[in-house]
Amino acid sequence: MKRFQLSDAPIRIDPLRDSLRHGTAGAFASFEGWVRDHNEGRAVQGLHYEAYVALAEKEGERIIEEALGRFAILDARCVHRIGELRIGELAVWVGVSAAHRGAAFDACRHVIDEVKSRVPIWKQERYREGDAGWLHPDAGSHPKD
Image (tube, rainbow, N blue to C red; front, side, top):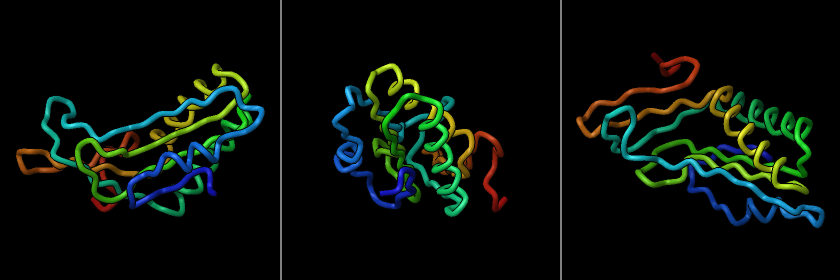
């Protein structure tokens, strides 16, 4: 199983969490990012995610490898959705196992922060008023623009 994945299907958490079980693990921390119905005062109807797949997978794996080297963790996984998502759907999941909770929490936060900052995934919010807008922390617009 890859440590970082993009998925056009709903994320199945149980197999991911099970893949992080180790006899030496005393802690597990996870993060779930859900599609919400608002952003910056605007009503959101849904989202569409696009990614530069080859680069996204490579950078995502690099982030997990960095976390393994930086924090006292046993393993980590991250899955990010692409495609159409409805309100309430799981958009991103991160899981980390470690001997102790501090390292698991710290690494989990590091992974999601770095994924959001570095991985080329663009989010298009569809607003209830009928318009839409591409969002990405670095570029501010979709690469096709």
